[in-house]
Length: 60
Image (cartoon, rainbow, N blue to C red; front, top):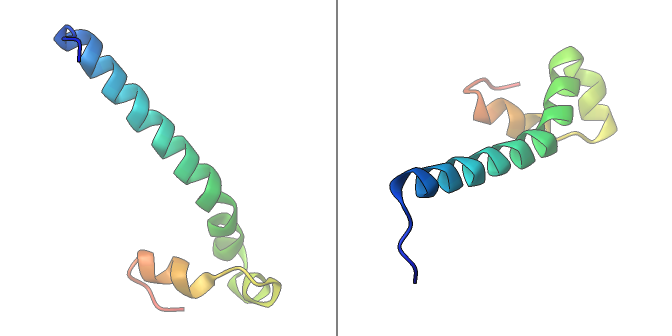
């Protein structure tokens, strides 16, 4: 294991965090937007609106 300077290590950690957030938002963003605009149509189309509602503390 090589030792890194603190600035380089912080940059790498921030980069990994940004990448994970981007992937998460790209996976959940579209169904969340669809369920927000019209939850009944989203449920009819098979979007898991109950799971999305649970994450925000609301119950559809």
